[in-house]
Length: 447
Image (cartoon, rainbow, N blue to C red; front, side):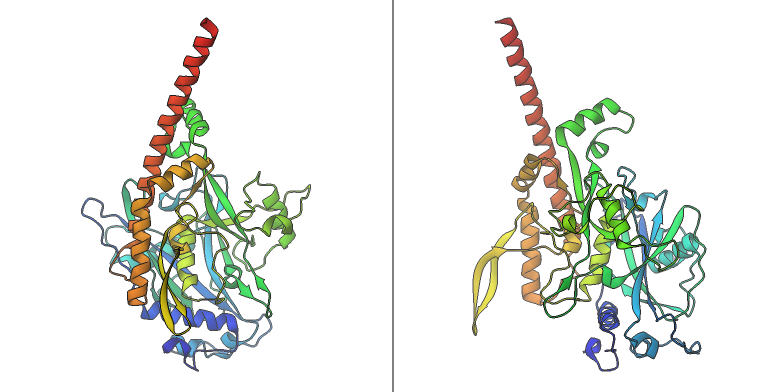
């Protein structure tokens, strides 16, 4: 296979994983979602990857022709044991509506990109144009190559009721070892993050280094009540609580550089975030991060659509066999079960077990702070569980994800349909409880 050829397997295990992933992305057709006539809007983002050579390594002159992927990963500075693959994230102080998280206080990152405009020649052109306009990076230069496209993503309204646009992510690789000049727009900072800090990495025979996971808390009232109705928002906040999304915590880098602040500073920052660190998502996080009086720099969090696309990319790497990409149960609320094929020696048999939906799919699904809301989501989640069973069955039959079926969109639609029904039931039950309480109190006072 192309991803295991001798020319492609360098001496550096991290670049070897990256080479395997990029070859798989290039050879795998993406799942393309056609825009419905009622909502033709689209957007595109660029996942930009580079390999940083050791600082004191003597670099070769610039190549006259653009190398192929196999030739690139066979270069000495790429195969060097100290070479470090990195991925680019941007932080927007005023995020656009493609991934707007104004209803949370967390510092979030995303990928460069934006909406398709009239005159764009396609989603790839949109990703390249938006990257140039936002950060001043020209992906059409010979220093960059487009490796391929990940699966399209649907952007919906807050609770998945209406489609807003379709998002297409494209993967680019920087082919030169030199720092590329950039000129980001005001209120936008760039953060190059080592790829190996995003996935579990085996260090030694029995040690696995895990990335740090936390949560992002979003006020549910901001999704249900009008923006200027403060009283109604307060009532909704009391009745339905908040939503928690899984988030990958990134080391805070100086803007536009690869120099990371001390890990203890990030730890102190997380402890100062008023409980947003959730030990249930990463049990070792609470003990790793001691309390401190000082407040360090605010940690950057990768979540939502950006996290889902990042996990899509990492799934091609298969970084640590036997170790899941995420330490949290990706489908804890629904608990999908079905008959799973298993092997007993040379015989194949079926057993009933839990199906774990891919983290890249469930990373955009929240858990609610009130347990009864999660319970009612499970009650109304029959159609969602059937979608996950069908997805797992397609993997058993075909051995790979069927790109003809929009599993992500189907799961998104059915999950949020269950959420909406659950919220209606919870609100009705809360209202009945309040009325019964008022009636009982009135009777008690007047008897």
